[in-house]
Length: 175
Ligand code: NI
Image 1 (tube, protein in one colour):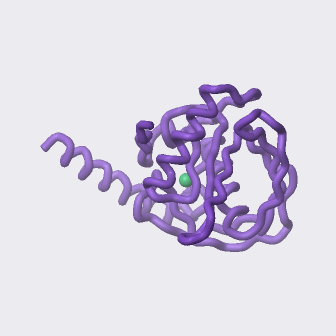
Image 2 (cartoon, rainbow, N blue to C red):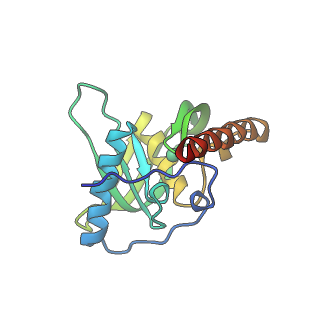
């Protein structure tokens, strides 16, 4: 299975509002598997379809630590039904922002509805790292990036670094 190419920020494809899947078929199932493989290889704990160039509402996550059994989630049309009133801070990163990290405050737990890889409607109550990860990935489906939760000063600093990184990568490709 070919690994997918992860789009680096800033990129207009990361700012789109993605389309609903409505029913998970073979093509979406294959995308979920390819995304999961790409995420594990990166390595990362979450990945959204727009990060690999597909503007549909699909995310994958696995927050299991090294040595633990894998706990993959493949979700289509994930939707936050309910969120905690109180927020907690986690240091977040993103596969579209290599080497960039910053604290982001989000609700401590969320209740999420989604379609699984067999198009079965499921519900999940997540807390801790999984809650943060799900909110981060669901944000991607609306063109929202973790830097959009930061002050404009911090956001611009990270985006400037990313532009420089992308220029360097392009120069290496040409050379
Ligand atoms: Ni991300």
